[in-house]
Length: 396
Ligand SMILES: [Zn+2]
Image 1: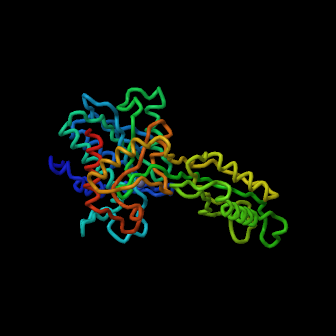
Image 2: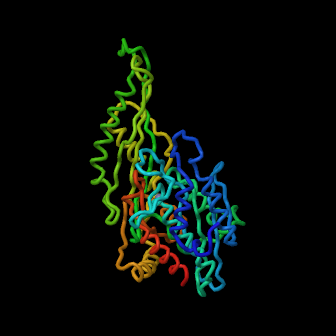
Image 3: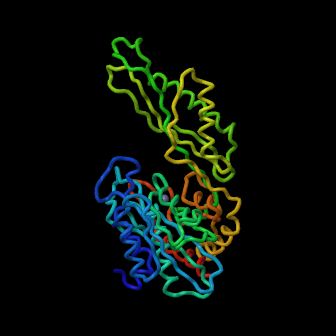
């Protein structure tokens, strides 16, 4: 249990959150107590129960859940959604103890400290203060702690269904929130636009035979080599096909993995690559696959197979979050000095929340340069400033 004072301190929250592993295996076959969000989810439910606020655990996949908590203000003119994800990336190669929070030189070190347990800690502390102080004219606030941000977006996809799918009535959040702030490390700037990513596999097929007589087979790896060369050419042409976004930069394509074949003495009958296609605001995350297919058809004399994408790129456009960003920028500037509205290359939950009709921005403590790193850390001063900004934004 946290004391009253500890519960208002984002650093106290962050130390507890970092000590609870919630690693997303990200599609790898990894098992063990540090994987998935279950223990983090339990911690959050227990915290909100102790705080005495309406809260809800919503299972979105076996053992994986979003946790929602609600602060209700009698005179509220709007409902603010604050979102932070529970999962972290894996810990491979880390040079610090990932789950033993270490405070040194004004920083807190540990996996997730920056992405995004720091942001969640600031939101928890601000939410707690709202519940305790109940400022007049505060907004209603729903704090959503979502699962599976780092891999396939199960959590946020389920979250937005709460207000887009009428059959989901009866939860804490059946009405569409008026605005949303998503916690990710932005160094206290406001991200108003970002890219998204569509990721899928391309497969080539061949005909296997003994490698001592390769002329009797069809080599799927040779075919894939031609696919990869065509993709490289396409990626180089992409800036002339899709104009760069003024805030987010260019559309890109990258081949990130390759696998194939059976053994060295067999002509391979299959090969597969994984594609990462970053989409800019204005692009359709499904259409980009059709464009790649059309390009390959013009270059190749054999068929290729596209597997269904495991994630479809959704970007955050800046056309309807202007008033929200301006209001938030005022709160930030009062507390932390001049900050900017920016665009970034990496994706966040804000794109999917915005696509469900809620003006959304990304704002949080920490620098994306320290996210996912081998010695991940966050500046404690930013934690405190972000807490104050979240509080003031919701308190008026
Ligand atoms: Zn994150």
